[in-house]
Length: 587
Image 1 (spheres, rainbow, N blue to C red):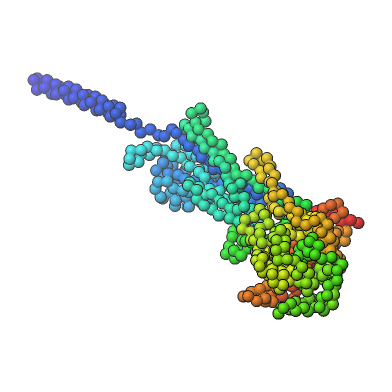
Image 2 (image 1 turned 60 degrees about the horizontal axis):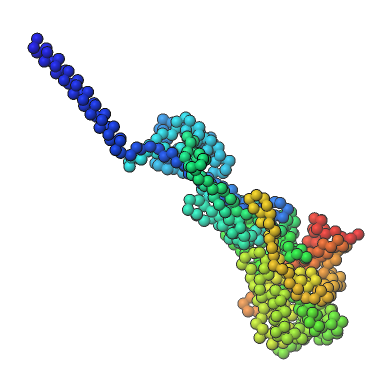
């Protein structure tokens, strides 16, 4: 009996001790949680949405270059419930169109894993919707790392940068330009390297990224209220070119066709609105696709119209002629002895293609006499020769809105003390000009002696689609109106009676000058040529355009004279302008 009571007492005591131990454990646990930080998930969220680079449009509304966002999909493998990993892989593969085996391979890594770096906006939107579904299906779980931090992340779709698309491949290259990618902290940005992309890089650059900071909802979205921070997204300005794509593409096809037919290294065509300096076409046969630049494209990356200088040859003659006429140093009817086509100046021989005994000053231009130009150029004093070339824009940039423009070179003022230098410069040797300088120079003659800076961008457009017309430098008078009209009429005679006869188009007024220049290599002139025709066309309705054609290194055996290379192309360009309703021939 006594033994039985002892056992009962022991059991009761053990029960009380267990209850007491349990109570002590409860108190200890409660006290521990009171004095230590609670490991709660982060309820704050931050959203950043990058602004993108502005677009480039042609004047006829075609989108030439635009940026689009690309995204990356990131998931933390520790947050995927192992029991639902297969479900995650299946759904992500369906939404992203990435094969299952690729996803499974990437998920073998531990921690944050990037499943794709190149997701377009549409797919990114779908994947964000998928993230909500996966959360609803409890695919993701909380995880505590070795430092005691608890985190739970879903499928993160975040920006990885922007890509630049050129929708018409090589159209308007190289003046449109191209970009390169650079890392900007968390994402990849693009920046302009050449052409419009570089000249207007600051205007095109994104202005302001979207920023949202505040408490999050269950779908990890920022809740916007008075306690949240918000900064709106502002993309870069759009650029509106002065060049219509439809015309440009057709001119480019002409340059391509003629390049092959003439065996030329490159062909340039420029068309300027005479009364404004606005470029409506600037086409080269040396183009590249900025979406996929290869090593063979490197020579075409530079815009030859502004970055290549060359000895112009006889196309300089109307410029020198107009300078002499403006200074009353010549009279168009004055007779000049032309030495029967061969003239010795000191120890230097000058020859003419058309061997004439004599001609009027105006006929010197009509028949492109080197001897005649050499003789009348001697009437210019060194100072006025040098300063007049500078006034026309030679030896300095034209002011066109393209970077890396070359100055070209004119001889030092002291060189003009030499009769030989005065002579050679008068027919286009001993100085170097760019295609754009010649186009601007001719436009000065065509437009009543007033020089306009050429331009290829007309408007900036803000994110609200409001356009701002760009201001350009005020035009300058270089020649008197009387002189310009006299030279212009002589250029018309060159086409009617002289070396440019094959440029005529019925019902239009056309004037211009041919030039075929030897190319110097290794200090001496070789059997290679650049041939050009610069001039203008106008109709009875007042439409007028200054046009330049340069054919660089055509086949020197079959056809290299400007009259058989540049002039026929000039005519094709004029006929295209008629077809596209830029010109209206009189009946």
